[in-house]
Each structure stands twice: as structure tokens, then as C-alpha cells.
Length: 367
Image (cartoon, rainbow, N blue to C red; front, top):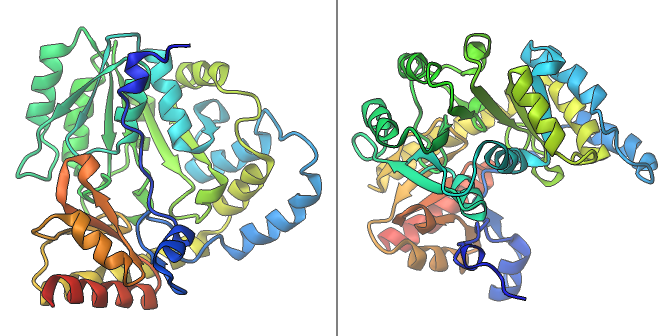
């Protein structure tokens, strides 16, 4: 059986290197993984307790209606249940949105250096990608985005905006969000997706979530993840916030048991634990400030971040630096697949992990 060429030509999404694999390859006992923007605290005590209780029911299929999860979501986001649905991570939601709104040879548009899942999903659906150049190398450019859309508006069906963006950590400010939506809400044949996976980590005073614009923007979708701030990346849970017709279309496409019972239970507990959110924020912000100070001292260029990670410039081939760090038990994330061969992304971990990463970077890059 012949596999289609468009599948053979795909470049698979490459996740962060696992700890266990690094330990086996290099004979290391202690390895710190700061590659995948995970929560170093793990799940909160409330989540752990809820999961322990739910284990006894895992011989049963999960609730296909996601009732308890939806009820928790209405309180957490102050939305109606008709405006919320959940997926097996936001990856699944992104995949279904492309399948719902695009056909072969249609296009999706997103800024350069955006989350690679958009590109991978598009390729699997024979959908083309339009990448918009950035302002000052790293920042969203509204004028160029509108210009690119106007050139291809008959073919572009989805515009993806990661805000804050991964892997750069940069963001679209509130004024630009409003201007962006003022233009794109008038484009009735295009879906606007704001991917806010790192929303909870933002400190910028001029950052603004797109959620508040759902009532005035019928073609808007906002994505949120439970993998980062809530510390349950392994359970795979993402949320889609949108107007009812979009949610209804997604619910027709998703499988009835796409969110596991454990993920549903964990999600409900996560949204009830504001203290854990604040604790994670403080650890993240403290870790970022530590990174900034040390990277400045070491004269290693970096991009200030609104996520739980920082992008650093190795000023050399980053894959070589990555390999040398692995030998020291530090896993960072090469981002050559994003078109950044000289950069590494470094997640915020616990204090001991952050210090070990900086020590290893100093040895490798400064000798």
C-alpha cells in the first residue's frame, strides 16, 4: 500500500528529549529536564487527591458530555457551557479546527516562529502555510499580517496567533489585539484562533486576553491548556472557548471519549485551586528573574519572556551546545525546527534545576 506523498514529506513534531533516555545514553544518575515548559511542581495536592479517588472508576468509560468539567469551566472563565469544549490537549483541538474549516490547498496564516503544531497539522491535511515576517525580528507585525492576508484572503481559512508566543516568549499587546480584532472580525470567512497556552504566566501590564472579545467576535476561538500552569501535561487536557456554532461543530467532530476520566477529574480540581496557580506563578517569575540576571552576567543574549521559559542565543550551532549540556545532565530545547539554529529554549524549573542549568551553560558557552 502506497503512503501519500504529502504524508511522507511531513516533518514530525519533535518533543523534548525524555529524562530516562538521556540517563541511558550518557550513564547519568541525575538529569534535569528544562525542555518542555512543564510545571516543576507537578500536579497540585487537590489534583492528586482527586485522582486517587477516581482511580477506582477507571474500568468505566469517561463522561462523554464532560458535564462536571463544563460546569467548572463556566465558573472559571465566566462563560456559558455552550461556549466551552475540551480536547485531548490543545493539539487535538487545533487538528480538528483545521479539518473543520479547511479543505485541500486552502491556507492557514501565522507569524514566523509560531508553535509548530499549526504547521504539522496543516501538512497532514494538505493545507498550505503562510508565515508572516516579524517586526524587529521577534515581535508580531500587524501591518504585515493584514498585508499577507489581503494577498491570499480567498484561500486563508484560519489565522493562528499564539499569545504569548512559543518559542520566543514575546506577546501581542492589548492595543494591537484590539486593532487586530477590529480588522479580522469583519472577515467573516476566516477563523481567528488565539492560542493562550501561557496566559497565566504573563506579567506585562499591557497584555490582554482575547476571551473578553468572544461576545463581539463571532469568528474567534481562544485556546487554553492544562499542561503548563496546572501541571498535568501527562493527562492531556486542553480547552476551546468560542461562540456556540463553532463549539457545536467541534463537538460533532471529536470522539465521545476524547478526554479521559482522569483528565476530567483533574481538570475540575485544577480550576478550583487558585492558591496553586499563584504558587506556580511566583516560582516561575522568580526563576525568570534569576535567569535574566545570570544570563546578563554571562553575556548570553536572551529574549524577555511572558511564558515559563526563555529563549537564549548561543551564537553558535545550538545542537552542539545541546549535546554538551546533555553530557552534564541538562536537557534544554533546540529550536532549529522553528528556523532558529543558534537558539535554545530553557524552561523555568525548581531553584536547584535553574542553578544547575546556568552552571552548565556557563561551562559550555564561557569555558
